[in-house]
Length: 152
Image 1 (cartoon, one colour):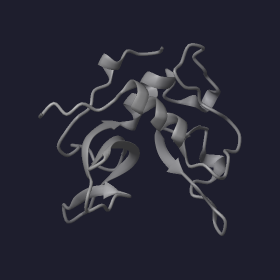
Image 2 (cartoon, rainbow, N blue to C red):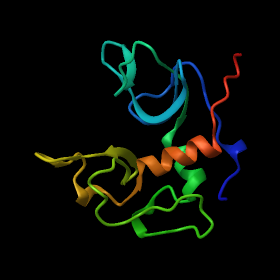
Image 3 (cartoon, rainbow, N blue to C red):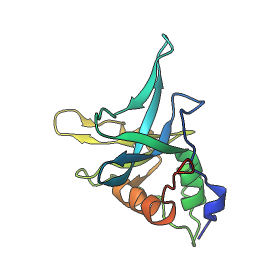
Image 4 (cartoon, helix red, strand yellow):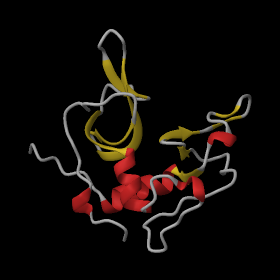
């Protein structure tokens, strides 16, 4: 394991910083699911999670994606092919499986990358240094960083 869970903590409320991706704990009546969501802040001051539009669920916790990536991979910038042998999860290189969304590492930022039959990758592959399949990443989040509501 690269980092202990105590180094990565869930936050509640609204993120202070907009324009970045967060690992999010989403509470549904049947239980908690995890996803990677973008915290959008509009010029008008309105802020909201993207893509998230549910009447029955709410985001109850979040962690900046970069913190979880650092803890799970030990490599924040995989552009040089760096790997940590005992990492929880490894960066992958080359073209991702088109049937699975992935978390893409772009120079100094991260994005969720998906394939569209008409338009291709949502992020041009030449801008993607490495990737992690999103389902694999979120499974590790659920297993190793389960959300616990500190307000209950």
